[in-house]
Length: 96
Length: 490
Image (cartoon, each protein chain N blue to C red):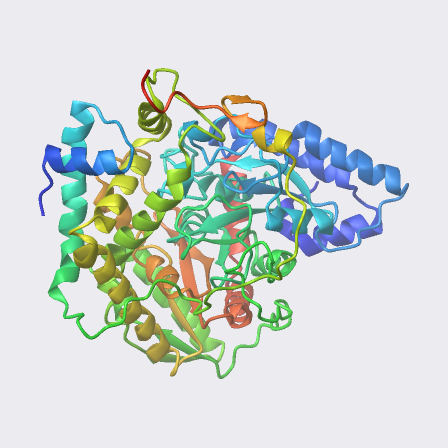
């Protein structure tokens, strides 16, 4: 499996990563080597095997539907790079 | 002269007898750090003020200190991916620089409740992704045995801090071997509990179906004591298991007669270090002399474990690390034009190379068109690997193997080639895929560097792996090797 720079570009966009041209070239090589190694999974017949997502076998664990005290807004916002009026502040979403 | 390696019980007895005090233990810890950590770099942060504040609180309560718990008044270190209210937690990443958690992880809360005193936050591979602690965004940690060698990873800071005598014990986290591998490399004991045994609340998530917190200690008994304090169900972690917590020290009798010990050829790779092979074979002989029955078993899908893990864990990581976007905490890029640009610039400037690599692999494995070929196939292989263990555990009580195929490698030796670095986890990764408990206990030296013996147990049967590890430890006295080496180093 060989990833091109364009493949890396596509995946980087999905992952919200902004890569330099040099990083793209290097990562194309590194990721290809990893996928090459992982291709050994293709040699096994797995058609009849159930996929496993978790070891515990626990499903949908519920707690009682009772209100709890949450962290106060000023504490939650303390780590924010930018905040105003008890809200997280981000750059403009739309132009103009 | 205090020596943390004499064990938690001895420290506790000294505190109870009044021959030492929590303050003296804490000072000893600070002095060891002051003396040795300039070179080792095990700590990202030492919390002088916070720990002294806790001591003052303690002193105010009682004139003469009388420990209420085995860990009361004894210092410890936390890997920097576990939150402690008010103390910076970075996961050794630039993207979390300056993050001060508003809450405390359940494990740290439980240790607090027991009276333990947090000394500082230990270095690690960024977001626990790595096997050498060279992926820390701040500095690499060095192996206390030989400073040109890595301490292992990702809990390399925790393992080095214990091995260098800076703290009596530390907590690490283990997703693919990150407690056991550095413990093996540093000649200390490392225990990864069964998935679900210990709450993950307050542990910054890497791969949520694998991550598990556990102790790194000087002895098997210490591992049992610390596990006792941190184990149990937690309403804050829905994956924590509602299963009774037994007395983990109950079976530390030294008696393992009649226990069935499985040995699988798949864990002894052709490329493994000859010294490691010999030490582990000798260890199996010791278990036999102690009265255990050695039984050959087979785990036929072991060779596929690394490929499986390096698709599944990055897939989970790519999802977990989506939260680092510069909005709610940590670093935000100042060069962004709009929101989308802010996300991608923040993440690109904040994450290191290995983290980016894994996010990309994981995103690729989950992306449309590749999901079935990569992610789902790996999930199916995970089923087969787990079934291998289930089959084996119908015949034996524990399985032993090397913890790692080689002893510690040189700093910089494997950083250029990710796949070679991943191979160092070939004996530990299958255990995480299956969710089982396993412990690494020192079993001698190869080329002057420590070798780890891994003992794997059935689900929620930490008692038996602790029993076997303890009997082995008592029979071989690795502590003498460690003491001799420390004297030589001085």
